Length: 264
Ligand SMILES: Cc1cc2nc3c(=O)[nH]c(=O)nc-3n(C[C@H](O)[C@H](O)[C@H](O)COP(=O)(O)O)c2cc1C
Image (cartoon, rainbow, N blue to C red; front, side, top):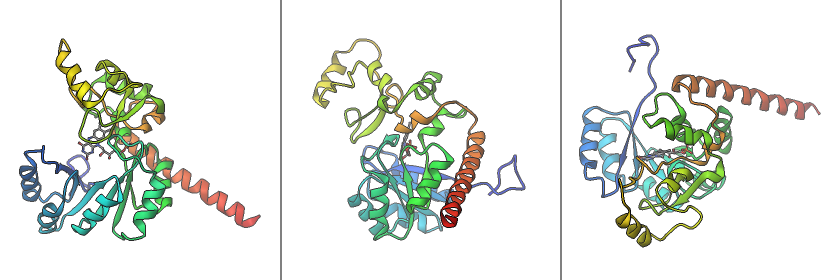
C-alpha cells in the first residue's frame, strides 16, 4: 500500500483497534468493516479475541491483543493471536501495574509470537530498551498526544507538557478497570486525587453536581507517566524521524560502550 504523497515508498501497515468489551455494542460492525477492507493488523482489547482471530486470519491479517497480566496473555495466546501487547505500568489509557521487565521475561518463557510493550515509551532510546528486554516492538501512545495531529484540545496538550510522573493518577474510579489520568483534569472534575472517593460516592457526587457533566475521556483526560518526558508539541512525522535518529544514536552509543569494555 502507498499513500498519495509518497507513491515511491510503501506506507507502513495500519492497524484498527476493536474494543471487545460487551459495552461496545458495535464490535461486530467494527469487525465486519475490518474484514471487508482487509485491515492488515487488528488490535483487540478487553475481551476474548477468538472470533476476531478466525475472521482476520481468513484474509491473512494479523491480530495483536492488549494484555495487562499473564492470565489474559495465556487466554489470548490460546485463542491464536499473532502477538501480545504487554500494556505495562505507567501506560496511558487502561493500563497495567506490572513492570515491563517482569512481563517480558515471564511471557517470553512460553510465548514465541510477536511481543510488543507499552508504557511510558517516549523516545528512540526507550524503543531500543524495549528491544533489549527481549520484545519485538514498542507500542507508543501518550507521546503522540503532544503532536499537531492529535485530535484533542490545546489545553489537554498543554496539561501533558506540564505533567510530571506525580501528576498521573492511576485509578479505576472512572472506568471499569484501572487507567492513568492527568491529575489536573481529575481536579477539574471535582475529585480530590489524594483522597479518591469510592465508585458509589463518585456516582452520588455526579448526581449532585451542577453544570455540565464531566465526561470520561472528553473532560477527564488520560495520559501515561511518559508525559513527564515530553517537552514539546510537534508534527507526528517529525517526531517519528527524531525517534528513529535517537534510536540509532543510542544503539551506536551502546555499541561504543561494549567495544570499550571488550578492549579494557
Ligand atoms: C488518551 C489515550 C486513549 C487511549 N485509548 C485507547 C483505546 O481506546 N483502546 C485501547 O486499546 N487503548 C487505548 N489507549 C492505550 C494505548 O493503546 C496504549 O496501550 C498506551 O497508550 C501505551 O502506553 P503510553 O501511553 O505510555 O505510550 C489509550 C491511550 C491514551 C493515552
